[in-house]
Figure 1 (tube, one colour):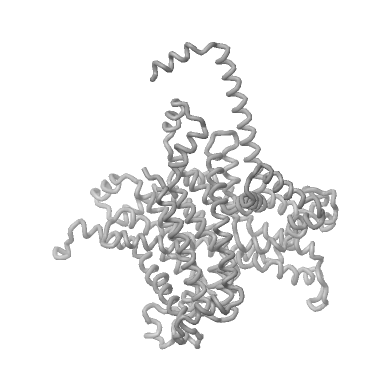
Figure 2: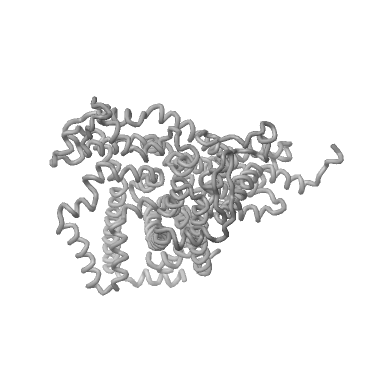
Length: 299
Length: 336
């Protein structure tokens, strides 16, 4: 007993290791090992044998196949990265706006909050998939309305475009805004967690700052840009990263990777595809993180 | 500063002051109308599909083709719900799913709380590097690990132990609950990295003195954690449990990968349209080979009712905890 006596510091260190040991074991066996294996798979031709698998090293062939030979992969990849780049600013803008709204005091605020976070609970790719076959989509889908009342629905969109164009906005912005309006449900339903994060950030801004600004004669607009925005800016980075990662789930690329592995049994190609995807996303994250972190204000 | 302020107050004529007040009041009123319009509009966008589903669930078949009906059905009926429950085999399915999801959620919460506490309060060699690795697990897409994990659980073997004792090539754990249980218990399940992060942020913010007092009173590290720290961590616990529960309940990725044949609601919902198309003619008394096809609108109606049945437990759960949940995430939570 005496000889095992450790200093307080190293005892604390051991205790800490004990606390994280479940995670550490999981990390080594269920994350790091598969990660390394997946690199190996992507460089090999994998065939399933009874009770295991056989690997044939083929070099970069799988990567070449994924980009050059596979009919749809590169198109899907470009499409979904493009969609992600469009979505992230919309979701971010909407969630910051909504969080500011929900942070103000008004009657029915608790109920409004409960409703606004409902999409967090209900967001499910399975439900979304089944819904496309449901009655709501058969009867009340936007495209159904458009086809049944030809002129009416499309005229609406065109009139928005005309109006915005007359105001003098460049066509690219107009397209973007119209796009955002058309997809409002998607945006609302995928920004629940982001609203929560922003709301929590807004609550942590000390109220005295606004009081001071008000005494000094700042307008609401000014105090938003000079106080609120800088104070929540670290969370903008968090939210951007969360939104980008969230867009993995149920994206067409993930679906293609899954199909390649389990429908066509081409595990090597599938691993190569998933690594290409990981690298592209990683690149986007690094660029976005670098650009944003230079502008973020930490206090 | 204060002096000049009062000076101005005196100089401003009374009339002007009253004008100012009226103007302020109108702009406040306009703003609050604008705010209500926005809040109600967005709430409508969110609630509309849900309300529509509830309305469909109680609608009789003949009401589908009646264009004068909006939302409130003319012929109330519970037939849709009965039929959808029959198609889905609802009650056993629900019991099974709830059991599975509850166990994985609890395991996730425990393992993530332990890891979060370990990272928040102890410094050991490499603790910062390890925490960076936690963040890495959040960032790497699950599809990258998919194939190795699948093969791993197809012939599960820890350090070759099974092979050593039985001579076989590991155990096939696919289509059992074990893969999800194991990943949950080792804090590697769905979005576990995020949960570890939430717990770490919370425990970092707790005063150190509480623990020190417990230590001096002779409580060991795990006892302090279980008796002192965890009871105080109610708010992150609720957040994590709710998120974990919901995400596990809705998850199709891991469930389809590891247990594609298990009766789980998320898997069942995805195949609901096909099932409804196949089963409804049979349930209505036609033979399976009679070539009868059900009315597509009626099938769609049953599908919508089925979706409602599938998300109903989540909505009920949310009704109970939403208030606590929103408050807790604000007080502790996700923010540093």
